[in-house]
Length: 349
Image (cartoon, rainbow, N blue to C red; front, top):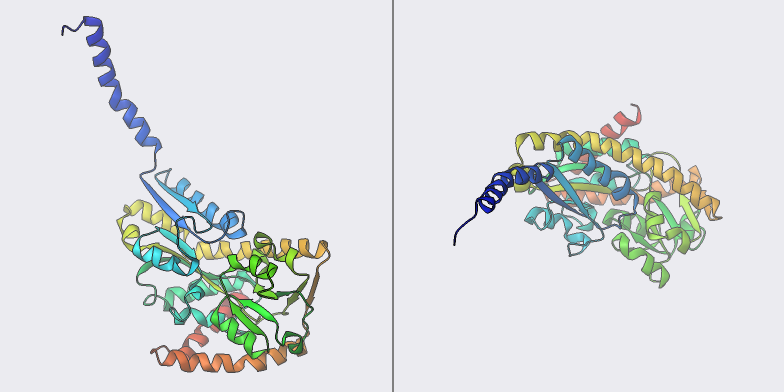
């Protein structure tokens, strides 16, 4: 079939232009897109005020070449206790999770979750935990690239009835976040029930639990302040409990990144991110506690004398943990000393 001069020129022009169009498209697209999976709704404080800004800083720092997409509320499937293995196995590229969801799997991380070890503020806890991780968690997290390890601020008891003494805790069905928090609650006379935090609202509404032990930060996202009226704080440091968090990446995916992209990820993670996390928890916690108080809920702290009773009652939990981890060739006493040293360092910073 004959080709006219006009048709030939149009076709040739399109052929010449096509590579330019492709080049523009590729220049605007990310070279690498990573999927970050987590268990909370996108409106919760951690994804909204920490994970999303972190992802944006990395995208900006790489000139758009590396993009991180967030998948909240277990959108990629599975349950919160499966998140670590999703990062290990490559089901997700990055996960945010609690080691406490897989009880006993990461014994060294539990040192911060022991009763009356952690500080009241996340500002201290988060930086101390990250420093501890860099020194002591390499072996336990070797299956992934641990991007950041941190703790939240002081956890509270949120319940349907007033709590100011150990006697008030007797028989109270309280959700606990980690096995050691559960053991501590049991030592205080409560009836602890373990569950991931997304299950708390329905469990409260159905009367499966009478309350929950969580920090202020997570309260609005699961509407705890609408389901209970009483909120019990533990004054000062050390505080009753905290929970640890991991931001973990699939190791082969991390190692496959070009050096310059990996450098940006490293710069935005580790201690820099732990510091941001600590500030976020403290700032948001203060705002939420004020909001809860303003709606008429009761917020009270136990007395210092009562706190001393709680500390004494939960000491066996620490002694038992040290003996338990020793059977796994973990020197719990040494780890406890290291954690307390880091906490003291940042408390006085």
